[in-house]
Structures are given as structure tokens and as C-alpha cells.
Image (cartoon, rainbow, N blue to C red; front, side):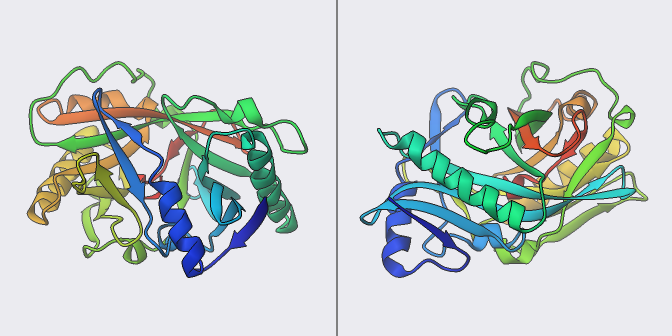
Length: 308
């Protein structure tokens, strides 16, 4: 097995092997369907939109066995009162087989050495609900720091149509009572085919940036149809009604651009009041967990779906 660290477009043979590797993974869509993800032959474009990304890739004689991407990020805490550097770990995929444990250890060790060499100790990743193994299951040994659950978020996919039961994953907590962590930085224009569009304003009580990820990441349904969606990045609201207005504006603009839905995420504690304002729309809810090390627990995490 060979471990590669890649920071630019992979050479042709490795890029082709990555495309074959990605096609082997599929992800649930609702209760009955699935989709797959393609980052294209350049692969790193999606991650480079967040910052100076490094792809760690394990292969055996040209066959990709696993991937893991690390990107240095900055967490803005409590509206900018504090700034915390941390590495975002994402795109962890390992093909099942007898070498699975060895591949995971190699990928995690490579990233750990890179983080420590940068003088950092903090890292985080996002795990979608339903994932079989949590980071706490495979960290905390072999020199890898233990990753703990740091927060809960809701990933919402919003489209026209009747609403359903939205309360299964929400809480009654007031988001203003929590410390807030917002992942900042990144360049939407590197990943978005459409011209990013600013919606709302802080003065109006809510704002977001409508974009897509189709320059660096595309979603494909099982029948080969592309799942076309926009993303509301940098979403923030001080008033749920204003937040709902921005989401509705984003959905209207996305549909005018030929996209069928918009994605947005919120901390689970902020979900109930917002969802109540959107009850007439069709909303798919996917819970997710933020895991990490070297960072405070109990914060409300605001992350962009365009970066998950």
C-alpha cells in the first residue's frame, strides 16, 4: 500500500482511479432512493474552494483504497469575538476489505502529522446521520486524538410542495443562549457554476449567499440524472420569519436558475422556530453530528452545506 499527499490536480491515471473509486459509494436520499457524488477528474476543486486542501490517498497498485481531505479553516466564535484555527477533515472513504483498518490508520496518521507540523491541535469533521461508524469508534488510539461529539446540526433540502412532520430532530432550546461557532473563509466562485447571489442583509434580520457546487462536486441519482440544487451559504438569522423569507427568496432564485431545491443547515437548537415558518414547503431533514478534538463542546455550529 502507498500513501499519497496531493495538493493539486491528480495525474491522469490516479484521477481515473479516483473516479472509479467514487462510483462505488452511494448515499441514501429519503426513504427509498440513493445518490452518488462525483468530484470530477480534478477532484480537489471542491475542497480548494475552502482553502489550501490536501488529499491523502491510499492505493495498492493503482487501485484506490481510501481517501481523506484536510483543509485549514477558521472558526468565528460568538460573532467574531474569538477566532479558533482548526483543520476540517472530510471526504473520508475507505473501501471495505481486509486492509480497511490499516488504510484508516495510515490516512489518519498522515493527517495528524500534518496538523501537528502546522502547530495546530484542533480538528473537526461532520458525520451524517445513519453513518455506521462514528469517529469516536476509531480515534483515541495509535496516536490519533479521540474525536468527541461537539454539536448537532440539521441539513435541510427545501423544495416546493407540502410540508410533513418536521419535529423529530429539533429541540426547544433558544439558539441565542448558546455559544456559536461559524466556519469561515472559502471562495464560492471556485465551486459555483452560477454567479453567487447575496440575499437579505444583517439589518433585515437574515442573510445568505445562493450558490451551487457544480464546478467541483455533482450529485447523481441512480438513473443517471443529475440532482440539481442550490446552497444557501453563510446563512444567518436573528429572526425566524426573516430567515424563512431569505430561504424562500433563495428557493425562488434557484428555481429560476434551473435548480429544483436548496440546501441549508442550521444548529439543531435553531431548527424548530425556523421550520415552523416553512411548514408549507417540502423539507427533507438529515441530522448530522460535528465531531472533533481540541475544540470546546456545547457550541451551536453554523456550517455551509456547500462545504459538507
